[in-house]
Amino acid sequence: MNGRVSYEEAYAASLNDPEGFWRERAEEIEWFEFPRAILDQDDNGAWRWYRGGKLNTSWLALDRHVEAGRGEQAALIYDSPVTGRCDTYTYQELRDWTAKVAGGLVDLGVGKGDRVIIYMPMVPEAAVAMLACARIGAVHSVVFGGFAPPELASRIDDAEPKVVLTASCGIEFDRVIPYKPLVDEGIALAQKPVSHVVVLQREQCAAELQDGRDYDWQVWEEAAEPAEPVALDALDPLYVLYTSGTTGKPKGVLRDNGGHAVALNWSMKAIYDVDAGDVYWAASDVGWVVGHSYIVYGPLIRGCTSILYEGKPVRTPDAGAFWRVISQHRVRSFFVAPTAFRAVKKEDPECLLKAQYDVSCLKYQFVAGERLDPPTYHWLQEHLPGVPVIDHWWQTETGWPICSDMAGLELLETKPGSPTLPVPGYDLRILDEDGRECGPNTEGAVVLKAPLPPGSFPTIWGDHERFEEAYWSRYPGFYLTGDGGYRDEDGYVFIMGRIDDVINVAGHRLSTGEMEEVVADHPAVAECAVFGVHDADKGQVPLGLVVLKDGVNVDAAELQNELVGMVRAAIGPIVNFRSALVVGRLPKTRSGKILRQILRKMADGEAFATPSTIDDPAIIDEVRNVIEEWRSP
Ligand code: COA
Ligand code: AMP
Image (tube, rainbow, N blue to C red):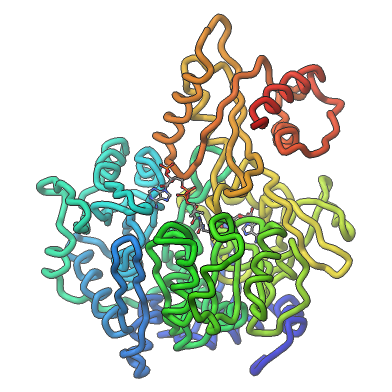
């Protein structure tokens, strides 16, 4: 399987002989010791790749390139329109910096297997912190800056970090958001103690440091001796990244070192068609899986130049920001969520700002994170002539794409609304309620047959039972993606949206179950339903329906304000929870289950059949009237 192979050959090889296929992919990275086994099962019965392999992901991402003579090549470009900074770090510089920060962690008593929470904005220190953990075998858990203190607290309680790394503030457009008070509150709310907090003091905002617990990043880093990378087992954890599930408690998706490095290295070439020296840009955040895989680890393992962008698609300073960055840094492959381009399109519908820049370097436009709506797809196609617009579908759990047109193998015919075909390694099926495979063009649950390829998660941190229950119990032997969809007569996959209580708001994955828990806490609320409704800009936004307790008399607008404030304080501003409507009753089945899918369809103006199991069909009209009134301008 060396040399250029067709998609079909690669896909067939990956399913017919997974061990042979992934052995070859493993030979494409450098190991301290090559694995003894390619695929086997661990004590939990979970499939594991590359047992016995010894490696260090940080060494692979940094030192190896320096040793190969690429030390002077740009590794990371920090482009920050919100601060006016644009700094380039070579592989040598990034390696040396990472070694110092790793040494700083060692000074705080952090060693192999210890957890470190990183709650930081998009500054290069965030990437360095991740790589520093990886260097010494510590397990990082990055928490997205838009999450509120209780979310941070629940992650502290679950991950039990020795150290929290943070910064004094983040910058949202022109707004400085102090982070340190959020961290202090998160630590205070947590049951588990945090011994040390290291704070990067940014010039936009000085944070107060607590004696004995908090350290000034600069002083701490300067005092440290560089730490060498340690040899880790392929199965050792690299990171835990929390993602939303159907309940209030986020799931700690665990990633191990070996499979992750192999899969990302291969994906950089096979999917994104980039090589060492190419400039690659994923305009996401290190707090999301895209940031882990395709801002930090993937591009660096491959030897690319990665861009870490602290800005927005618009208003930093304008809707030409993406074109400016692509042109200035000569980006070859660009990856972003469709919502970001919807924001650009709204401000610059004719895409006039692009004319100010030479973006001829751009060879591929990748999008993921949410459904690529056809208008955005066509807009991109129209304004990027000759540049394939590639929709690809994946999840935090898999860590890399499940379905994608594979630019580095061969580009297939695209169909709007489809992320094309399954990536080699993923045996994708569509199953009906009874576990039978659906025929072409019939919607069902999108599942993946075990074993999942390298890089996919082997467990949930500290809760393997939940891993089994949430993902593997519905259809034994198949991983439940949580997405619904179908394949057409050519096998093209169409992802139609979540079949659980997860929604996608501006490319951010959120749990409506968690929002319901917060709303239900209000003293006036008897019960509630929160579900995702279509939004032209953000893809989806949450809408809450609340039933008041008997005898309670509240002003609806006031109640909405209070609920919006509660959700924001409990989960964070990124939830975009802005509407809560009072209804007399909620539509339920006779067994008491709220009919959320029907509520969503109703709110989106889609057709739906009233189920025969409904408790009282008259409720449908009552609720519809309330939603229609809310929808009307
Ligand atoms: N730290 C603190 N607050 C944050 C934050 C962060 N890292 N990110 C977002 N927020 C806040 C915003 O300031 C906003 O606050 P507000 O309600 O007080 O105004 C709120 O969370 C909602 O943010 P968002 O929904 O992101 O809206 P926006 O108008 O700020 O930005 C986009 C819109 C399209 C620019 C932005 O959503 C975006 O870039 N999305 C892409 C997401 C992505 O890359 N996902 C990864 C998958 S590929
Ligand atoms: P996350 O784990 O945050 O990456 O979110 C994963 C979820 O986002 C998936 O389960 C899908 O619901 C959605 N998603 C991601 N990419 C796509 C895509 N290309 N098309 C449709 N939905 C997507």
